[in-house]
Length: 378
Image (cartoon, rainbow, N blue to C red):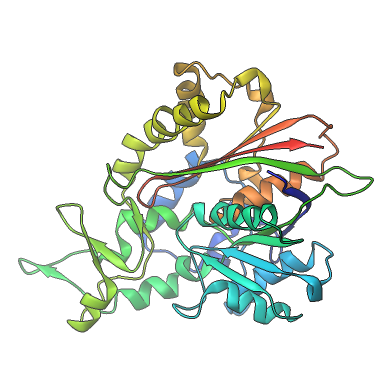
């Protein structure tokens, strides 16, 4: 593929937020949420993350569109000459119009093609694939972004608003779905940030670039039910009922909180990532572990690191830990932006050498999709 990443950027709002400062940013939690937080933070390995919130006022400091626009500006390109802008996110500021249109509006410049990719973590790499294909088909430049504004979903005020109508069962008060474990679980996993790449048909002169060898995206929705979702509630049979049906019936029921079926996640995610998806990629591209110099896995928690390492070994594709590169501990889980933010840190580290091969892994648990990307340093 004649498509090269010639610049990489990341934008993280505000100052790093430590685990002891979460209440100042996300609001006070109830007793059950506090216990969930303690349990999740003990296992996910995240020490600092970023939120687009002013802790003094509780006001949001950036829209998602502006986070992405700041990452694009950090590429140092002439916005007037941009031909194609591809933006992925799971947390757009509005239902309509598309996220990329709003990012374009923030950037200004001239007319260009804009593409919005939706989904969850995979939406960022989907945007990158579209941008790469556009350049390979003849466009001179394309920019791809991944960005997330998760803090507005995570704030206690959002949960309180979602729980205005209390449920009762047999005359006893029940904890509202907005405060279920499926929703609380993600409050301590997600954070804000954005990343961007510039893709051109030739490598940059006098500096390192990344050749995009291939990007593989695979959905397993044919085989598995929904795991992570918002704007819907999951039924006992595994199906989703969307927000419009609930609002038509005059119900809210925590419909817009982000939820995850943690049991389903733990049972299926490693099998899907490694046995089902990576095995296909290995077969298709003749991939060998010894040919990989850097492995950039996007995972939400250190809880999954050891099972992932064991899964790779079990299929005959062991990757020694010295090849692994992650900044989950310091940058948090930024969803669709995570791979960009990892790539920017590695790209800027001075550790890369011409000929190095980078294997990226980007799964999403929405309905179990996985992205794999292979880059060669040139």
